[in-house]
Image (spheres, protein in one colour):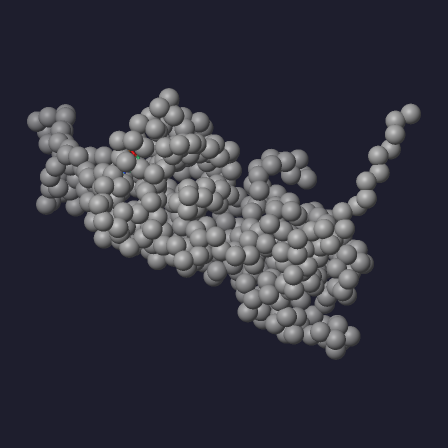
Length: 416
Ligand code: C5P
């Protein structure tokens, strides 16, 4: 008979009190991921947080208020119109009590109601009445998440400064596979710790280039590329959340400016070069994420170029653009720690290390753009980062999670 190996359970005193005294209002809406909220609450409390649970009527169908009361050690708030609850801690008091409002899981319906500014249940009313930072952990079917209405709502909430924590991709309760899974309890705990913890990039100024450039042919036409700017914007957003002062020099993209980021819009490689050379010397770190056009038409026609009947061909003579990241790396005064990107389709390490040397960079982040679904215009990416004495692979993840890992690595090498 095999021996049962009984180890003593981890006591809460053995766990670092990273959230000591933090007041977290956990808002649960009606999605299947609600069953994970009992574990989430326990993990937060183990780390010293106080958790006050608020549930929507639909949430009660997935996990009972009694369970949440038992794990949180506090009565669960359920209704806006409950005289007894209002007599103890009323909804306005609750809204003022929180250091952080964490909405997990946040269903498509809750997100839509928040976007509309509705107060038709206790949870949405609390969000309206709260001044506290709000983190949203979306959880829903992947098709509901991809729906343009939901995407639009998520973007609107982000623009208002709410933090979007997830969703993750993977197998869903309904059998679908895709984006829409709530982050796991420990991932949410880690984000709470990061939110309340020391900011690893506090006091560091970072300039980032992002997006494509446009090289004019005439007043209505240009040459450009498929860069969406998502990676550069994710880095800017994450760097700001990690405490950095961020200047984002962006080519033409249709993305919202991340919170607490100063954005400078440019168009051509030359205008990006000018902005980069002006700002790089006042920043300690320069990250060149933009897909800069290597060449531009040697002449920009004053008027729209007309089709002619005498030839089926048209020739545009191109001249080389300045290499922005190499120009920054060549600064002899106030040179920032300089990081480039390399999109490669083959022999990734050799080409990436070649660019690291040739452009005199401190680090280079290579991505294999021959892999379908990664890199350009995608939400996911994988990177291999090289620096003179080492390298590290960052596995496939969404661009936000990847940005966090990359910035951790950059901070390590910069401080090294
Ligand atoms: O040489 P290649 O274009 O592959 O190098 C890519 C890196 O160089 C990226 O970091 C990109 O932002 C930067 N780059 C630049 N200016 C250019 C061309 C590329 O800053 N004209």
